[in-house]
Image (cartoon, rainbow, N blue to C red; front, top):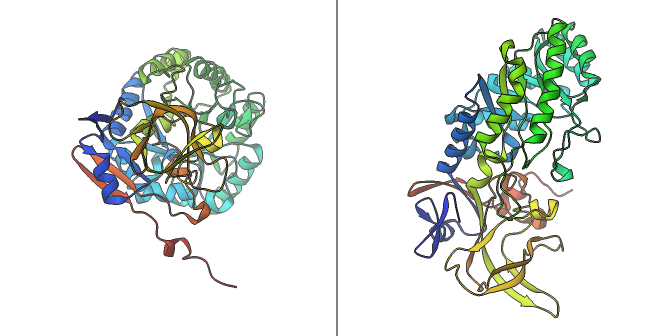
Length: 420
């Protein structure tokens, strides 16, 4: 074990609080986050970029719970959003609109209007048609929309194909060939103010080279635009830095290693005085969170052993969606004989699993397990499938904790429904 979750006298704790105590108070399944780990990760990332003026716009989609957003607001983060709903959450958490960048390929006119009224810092425009629509919306409102154009550098991030975003086959951004013309078009439009360039090549990147390759292509574009008289205020290199899920297949680069590579890649445009913007998500919150679940039953047949737990794919979708790996351990007494087992949930889908053929300490019915590295894309992707209330979320700080989201009730699940 490492990070904020450690065994103390044979029992897992988050910082100074036992997971058993949390489970007894809020039930299972439940998400538990370490405030100290979020703060540590943010400061490490911030320090890694200290070589130039920069802004860290947290990717709200990674974990959008108000209690988590509030920690990042206090740390001085901005936000990368992909919907007006995420803007609403960010503002409710105490964030300010001027430090928000609005990404996404399908912004509606009503979303554009709401974001302009709020005074967001920048729209990351992702197509020629979006450029035209945003210009019209802004002019109708008597405003100028600050924009960055998201380019697709056609760099292979060497990650899962579902979370790769910087290839020609992906839906995101515009091609490097199309970008210069779009920038020139945008610079002439009365409703737009060109302020930056943006790219984001994928998530859970475990190598430095894709970042460096993408930035090199951005640098070439920025240099070309500067010669055309289009002076950009910022360069946004997106997010995507991975975390260690404990699979044993290599450790991702540290923020310091990432920062050194970014500094080297941006050196050719250092004299232009642009601000660096980034959109990290997983790397700030992923390792800070875990899903706590309780073993319900065990069973085996001629081929397989199953450990059935009370958490399910509606609580943590990543294994079912991506086949992703999450570390799993008993909350108490981890040193015991191993059993090869599938850890599965109660939902009526064969895809409802957290691990397959995993060598784990033999688990007893009724005991608690820890599913680690679940702070990103866990609660944020949760659903009510099988009419299951979403799990509570708990934020730990030192020896105390706060329930930052209570478990949903069945009344809440049907509150917006009615019989025909």
